[in-house]
Image (cartoon, rainbow, N blue to C red; front, side, top):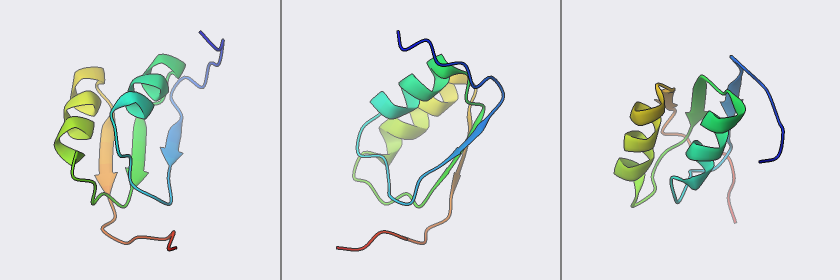
Length: 67
C-alpha cells in the first residue's frame, strides 16, 4: 500500500507494540526480524502475527521509552 520495500531488514522499537497491525505492516514491507521490549497485554497477538509472517521476534524485556 505504501510502496515501501525493505526486504530482509530488521526493525527495532523502543516501546512495545500494543497491537499486531504494526507487525502486519512490517511484514508487508519485507521486514524479517523485530526487536522490542515486549510487555504489552497483547504480546500473544504480536507473537502470533510474527509467527504467521515468518518474522523472528526478540523481546529485550528492557523498556527504553518512559513517560
